[in-house]
Length: 159
Length: 300
Image 1 (tube, chains in turn orange, red):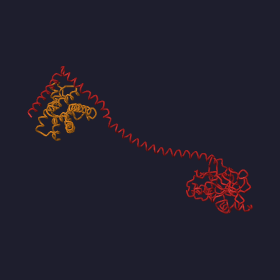
Image 2 (cartoon, each protein chain N blue to C red):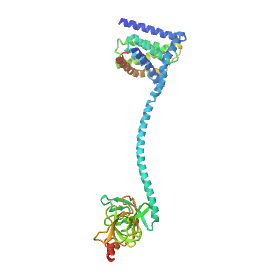
Image 3 (cartoon, helix red, strand yellow):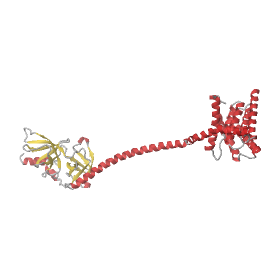
Image 4 (tube, rainbow over the protein chains, first blue to last red):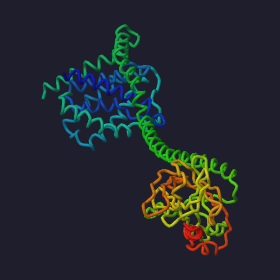
């Protein structure tokens, strides 16, 4: 049952992000809910499941794009592993930790994805505006998404 | 803990390799298959998201529309109420207009000069006694002017002006128990005194016992009366009472020509009577004294 719920949550997270970007994007900016979902899952779930969530959410993000299929999958998988390492030393459940993690990991993920893109396709997919603004939007989105995931985990046992 | 770490390491290694393979061989069959599989698996969520996103996106608009519709509905309900009141007023005005037009047509056919007045007040305690009209001395109304009502497209005697004020007047109705008029009974033109009873009926008095007074006979004002012009319909005989043993005349009930309950406007006939005429008649407000005097002179 939980696996069905997790699939549903996975699809809902991706669809919600897509819907938000289609309807509520402001000056071309929107919080990256797939990143927020991946980070929240990484905080809440065990290491294997967290990495799997990161990988599949990354695949979803890759599917939404047209280039470098697998780039976000690798990025979010590594992010989930990094969170697994970090959360053994820090309390990632607190709001402040989540804000700091969201900000820093957003930039790290962007830089890593840009590096991958430059390495594989010689293109820079991230504009400066997104690079500067999106991490802050992610920092706002992550605590909210974390609370949603946390409540779902508490009530249904998923993650 | 070590086991969990090992599992995490295996997991990241597996998924990282998988991702790198996808990145390294984007046009390979495996990568292409994975891409197609992911697209076919995940696009339905976008498809249905787009489909139902339309409804979700329109929720604020729809809510606003419902809210505005509700406001509009309330405003329209109020407007409907106002219009219903206006329709009621309009239908009352239409019926009043029809009535006034009919009365104007009738008044043009009347042989007397006068003016229309609206009844503005009726006292329940004196329902068949008097009412007020909205014309007074400023409009040329004078004491003892004859007041006619219109019923069934005919004019009939309603009463006479009793008191005159600048802007309104008081009318003494013929049905008032203190009112009377000298009348002629058709077809012979026999003169008799019609008096009010304080009810919806009148009473005709001093009819000689030998006269043939029949029910349904029309009664009009007589030329011999001082207060009212001759020929104004007063009513019809409703019931004839037999002669009392101690009296030498008979009496009868009379249905008035106009029902004072249904009157809205009256036609005031200018009489320009000198003030001393009614006083000379003896009572100041009825023709009874005058008629009694005449009857005494005639030896009745």
